[in-house]
Length: 398
Image (tube, rainbow, N blue to C red; front, side, top):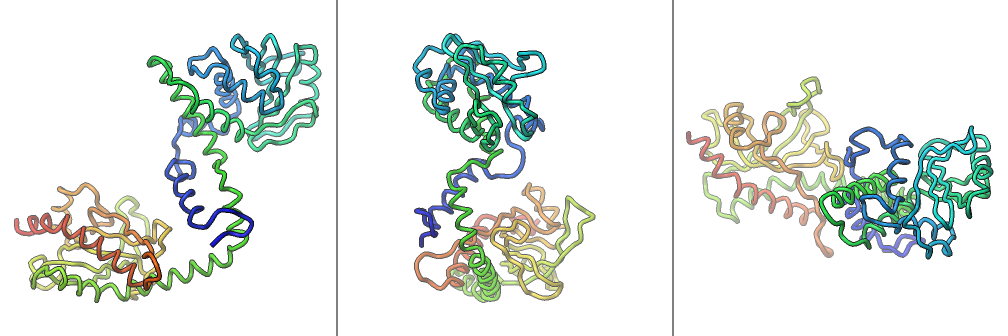
């Protein structure tokens, strides 16, 4: 099915978005040096990085590649063929007094003046005053470099976006020979880190238009599809206990293996003040893992959040982390939980260990969706049983 106005299909769009997320462009949290230092929104730090990258003599060993691409992008191809290796790169240049150019690059063939704006807007007659101040320079070229390619007030300046600058930097990094020496390698890594900063600032992707078009054209349908998926997942939770019973018989796990359904309260280990809420688990266990009163001490299970206390109605959502179902070792007995914790570093909610999100992947073809999803959960549950069953057995025998 093709999205209206786009040549990309939904499957291709989703795959490409997953790839971009995997590359860190859409992922939350701090990842680059400027992000970690809290400097992403400060213009002067971008100015220093950009001036460094445009300086052909610097340790990144990109030479004049990026400078040539910038000149080409703003329409000065005749200058791009000239030798720019001896360029002088300056920052915060006052000329005349009262005006300050962010970056000035002087060569024998031209003078490039860059006014950089990350979040700020242009000051009163700022670009006009800069253009007047550098009019006497050799072949002055003026660039208004902003986050989204805003138009300058002076028509002597050419607009350019940080997105475009990032594209040119990426092209340079891809085409340049490997940097020589450890110093060069470190500088090249810094250049790549800054490229990632720019890409994450803009969430740069050629799919932005496609993704936005898809949502604007089909948003209401997607909402309906989301609601339908919740109904399907609700049916999955209803069908699962009986299918787990069948699994026990099919795999011939033994007469001592039982299937239990458990309702319990989630209690956060990290945030003690957080309100507990009910969850539900379908658990595989051996009879020897039960207490003398029949209470479950440990097992391997599939768990999910409930909507209301005491009611086995799931609130599963395949994409919200707090509502995604999970598979792992379920140990409601505190003593068993403590013993298993010593051999499993990953604990969760005072009763789960070795936890991982369940994979909710639709089956191929026209197969019944609920049956296919249940089979996928059973495969994961079987793998978890194989991985952790002996460990539980060993702990409960001691």
